[in-house]
Image 1: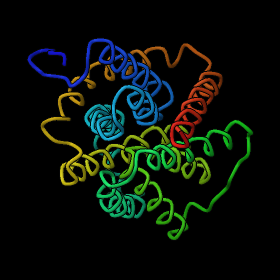
Image 2 (image 1 turned 180 degrees about the vertical axis):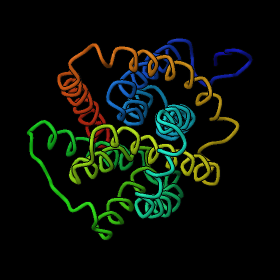
Image 3 (image 1 turned 135 degrees about the vertical axis):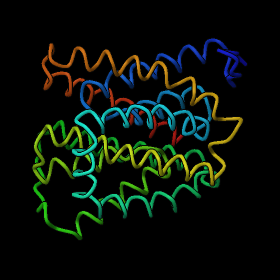
Length: 257
């Protein structure tokens, strides 16, 4: 048990140092590519704590960083994105609230498989260069992807892969993608917070880790923003995808073992 700034953290010094490093890396990746933070956090933290505590640990840093990303171009742009993807957000909120109630009753092995398998599928599709095109005006597809993303988010705090895949498949412009991701993830993070207060995952005993994880995540994100224009974005994103693939494979391995 470690004490930082008067906050008691349910980890020893070594595990806490590892958790802070994971938070920094997750923030760095998010600062550069706009997504991937929950996947890195849940995967990294699950190596030293239970999946339930790992899920609680990612809630507040995810909320903070997505709020910054969503409002980077101002409130009016964020509101326009919210209205454009309102069906996605409503469907995702409903399924997220339902799925969150199952976190504490699912076996850890099942939870690892549910988190890891979609990550592997998403990364493999991206690395093979296959493109999926969907009509942007299809309400059924928007609702369907929103339901799936919300279900994943409620169980694991990860809704990035289906969201990014949907935005890419509908040919959403890059600048809009970054803002829209922030809005969707930000509102999803708010819903996730309330859902897991209700489920009991986010409580007095687990909240301190989440509070401490805010700081390295914000530092990493700030550095990621600063270096974004100085590196080859395409190559860095490919490197990030390879890291996520390794993370996903490790989660599936732990699920089977």
